[in-house]
Image (cartoon, rainbow, N blue to C red; front, side):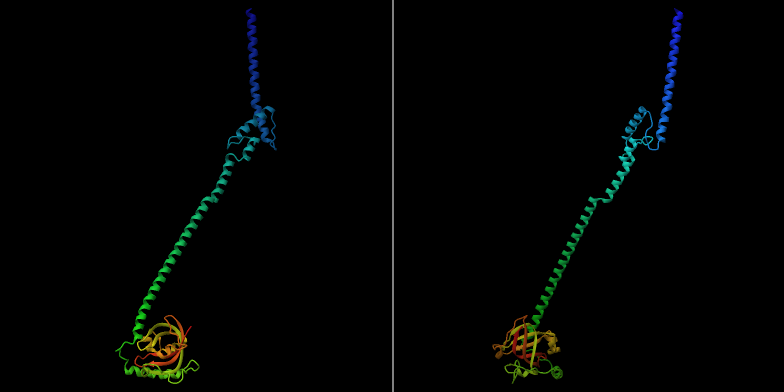
Length: 314
């Protein structure tokens, strides 16, 4: 009995040892084959897997699992890894995303448009402000010019009114100055010719003038054009005004006109001619064409057209 049990135990122990050896050899085979299979995959030119069906599926499954992880690539360039590269995950995806970010950053549509809009708004506001400043300055300048001109006109009219009134008691210019002006008049007469025609008067050209003895005739008929500056009905019945001459008639005034009457020609319409046909009694600012006798008022020294027998409003 004992011998039989011993034999059974020895036999069982031998079987166990053999089983362990076989299991060890199988494990070694599996471990040795895996590198070889993987090596074959690496050495394959077209990337075709050469492995036992079980190992191939396991490898493919591993690669696909790894492909799901960004930035991880499987050994041997498996299908899963290719999908990861084509899908631009991991580093590739980050690189592509970086490129997209750079493009987006370089375009900056929102910020650029906002900046342009802001600049345009600022430019528009500045332009509007500048235009308003210019308009204000122009208006101020215009108002100042108008005020200055108004003040000048008022002052000038006051001076002209004093001169046109010929206040009683005003002393005549000196005999020496009268003689000097007469000498100048003789020269002027030689430089100009009396005009003729239906607008001129024959006979005594000074008829109707209340101060005929004070008038020295330069030309018996002379015309002139210009702008009426100041008018007044005189106490002796004359209608008197100052005429701002057009350039071609400026020779009709002398230095005394420039000193005493602002350079204007003195024009007088005597009472007999005031209500006759062809005589217009002008107002300030009118443009007129006049005909009459060109004379010197000896006590005053200035030149006049007096009497004036024709006045046409232009």
